[in-house]
Amino acid sequence: MMSRMGTGLMQETGAIKLPPPETEGGMPLMQALKARHSTRTFGSQPLSLQVLSNLLWAASGVNRSDTGQRTAPSAHDWREIDVVVTSAEGAYRYGPSTHMLTRVAAGDLRHLTGVQDFVALAPVNLVYVANLDRMNEADAEDKAFYSATDTGFIAQNVYLYCASAGLAAVVRGLVDREALGVALGLDRHQHVTLAQSVGYPVGSAG
Image (cartoon, rainbow, N blue to C red; front, side, top):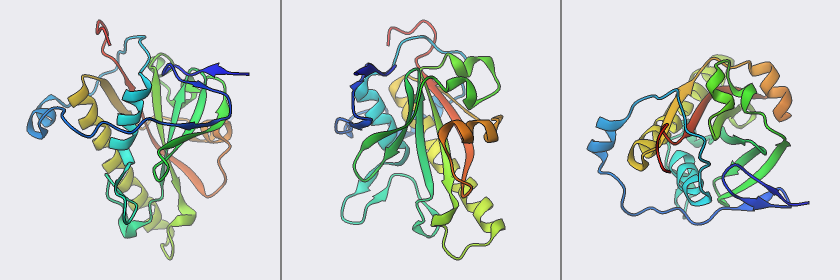
């Protein structure tokens, strides 16, 4: 049976090909830095599939096809951070190399992505998951440090894209990581680092 994501996306297989990201135009960097801020109130309008594509590519998409390297740096090129999109219809892992979404859980898990009331209302909550098994030869302290650092790079990319695109965003650390991990089907080597809510500002026409 086909279902509709909060992004307006129709899918029936759980594997969803995103449209190519729009990598031209947008706000100049210095203006985006000036506009960047956190917002904790969101309008109800869903993100379009194109906006979601742009958002995820900005977060951690491939910007060098010959090497597969990404818009956000990664210590030792571990690429250990997965971006999981939670919407009203389910949770989807973003695959940078294919620019696709793969469903990891059905149903609305947005309320599990944070303790604040607004997280259940934001059209999209991004969940950053560190796969510690990819961090070869790192000890526990380095895994914690570098996975947190690499998450920060991605979250800032999201903030700057949102500033440029007129979206509202806030990054959050208050997450019940155990409950969310169970809902997402995470293994012991996978750890939720942060979450980030994204949507249109209240009163925006989208």
